[in-house]
Length: 117
Image (cartoon, rainbow, N blue to C red; front, side):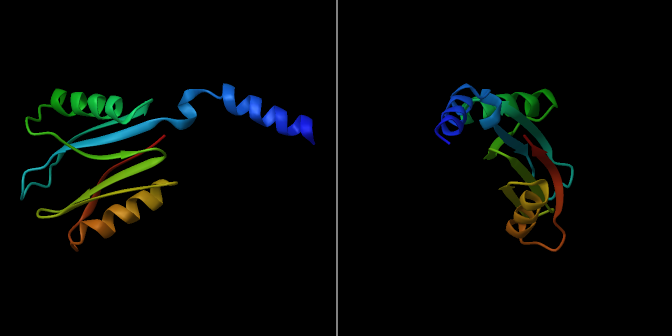
């Protein structure tokens, strides 16, 4: 039993950093616009790195007013309507999407993007 515990501790210390990777969403959503511009990143070591990569993607897609809306460790989702938006996170895409839709709080909301590590 002690050997099994030691093995677990060794594996935990040498596990690849991507096991605990961070992702982020940035969006450029003008009120009344269904075509939301966004950037998504995943696989980063820090929240700052994840947001920087997502911001770069958002700007490279031709969006001028990108803002940080969500960082996540497993799955993240962004939902929007013409007047509202919501973000969600969770241990599965379904869980993240359900939270984003609930936070969006508008019957016209739809999931715009979802990403999982």
